[in-house]
Image (cartoon, rainbow, N blue to C red):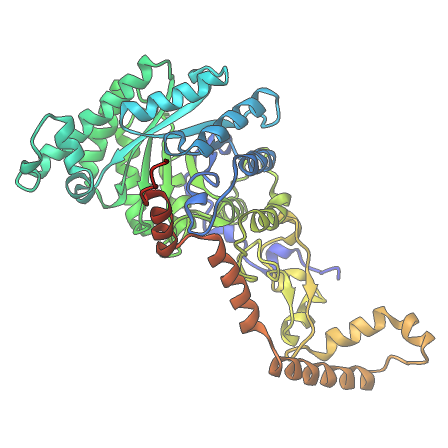
Length: 465
């Protein structure tokens, strides 16, 4: 329908309320994808190195700027992945994406990662090393406290009696030692951060970041490891941290989604000056997952007017289906932006309006993200959609001797409602869900499996003879 008034006169643009929110220039914002590392830490998800490489090419194609490919010191699979990815990058199959690897703040992790690169003929300068430790006092004293005591040459018997200040200072020395050592090994790009930042002391983190930069770190990373941030807290921390760092220094915000606030916290972090935002495809990750790539980039563009140059928004739904198949983890059908039914409509009130103009009930432009509006017929269907459907098939129905009339449309609508309720009564939805959950359980190993493995490997073998 051609409307007499411009759409701006008929509905308010959400950007009217966000136009004054400050953001870095869109060309400076970097999408930092952690699908291959944090995303794989989602219980039940596991990729082979070859699968990780394939996923990496898909993510690079859609337009992410930075990609974490794993934890080489933790597994042979991640070491193989790193080599495959770097060889592919050299061959031009990953474009200009920046590759990141993860290391704990110890020399062994750094040595293993450097050796993995050199075995494949790759200079460590080609890769960003993310060297991490802990940040909140809870983690510093009670998670890695004994490690810090050993690093400082102190006896473990002192663990509980030493003050928090000891652990804070020891942690900074541990981090700086690792950064300095990585530099000595030929690493030039060093991202560094400390877990549980959102529950840590802001003044301590500022000192931690400054000391890390002095030691040779190039990109600080601040995490909301357990997803407890509110947008208000993100702004409180973010403005203080960014203003205390050298002007223009790129900083990473690594956020989780435990309260469903990942996207708004990521947008808030961006408006505070964090230019590198950590996400995962489909939001996969530990517990409730990470910031969802699709939500972050689309909300930023449609609601805030910030378009990421070169990002292929139209491939987001294609990426979602691909990641579902690779991971075995389906997204809910009404998942924002990428859900299979998010652009589908059944209710008669809605479908009648949608026949006039899609913007009546779709605020996300379906074509922007590679989707299209569709209609589902069922209990809530209205006569208008049924009659429109029949008129579209008028010639086919006429060939069968059927005339499309308002009365026929009403009778067809009633039969649709009856059939849908009949099918609901014989639904096998519960069985279908159980089949999927059983299949996922078969992929994972249980505590009982661990005991069986230990029995097989640990049982003494009879002497030959």
